[in-house]
Length: 43
Image (cartoon, rainbow, N blue to C red):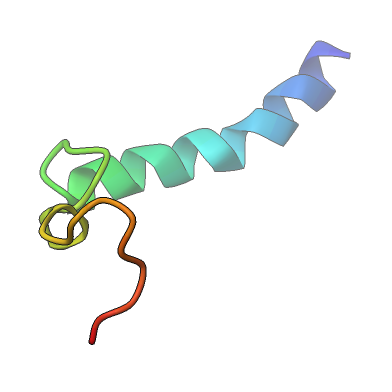
């Protein structure tokens, strides 16, 4: 069961670390922070 759990979580953890590395350790990229809260589209 632990092997199944490991192989299920491993891709998600890898993607998390790749995202953190690509965004200089930030969970939310700077581009996403510029918009006001609640705005989902650019006008």
